[in-house]
Amino acid sequence: QVQLVESGGGLVQAGGSLTLSCAASGPFLYKAMNWYRQAPGKQRDLVATITNTGSTNYADSVKGRFTISRDSAKNTMYLQIHSVQFEDTAVYYCNAERYYGLGIWGQGTQVTVSS
Image (cartoon, rainbow, N blue to C red):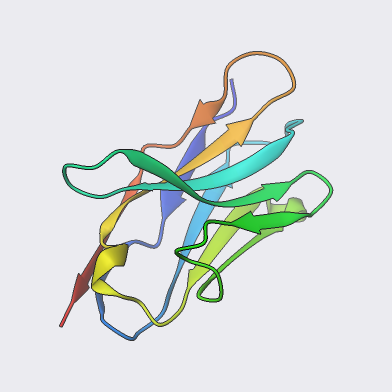
């Protein structure tokens, strides 16, 4: 079973930038890879998607500030966050949609925005 591990979260000042990583334990076939986030007391929301063909899609709330990308050679997906806002404080999860079976989730990485 492939595992996903997020990293790169932490404390960041408002207006700053950071990059989250999602490393897979090995190569695997997927339909799309996603970044979700869950703020305290709120539901988990989809923020960015990259398909196996490289197409990307973003939630309206993050368009222009978030960039999703992947490095297939490293089995790693990234999420660049620019102009960080207080509203970006959340636990960020990576997710893999597979053609068969259940999706795969990482354990999450906390992003906290400070003033």
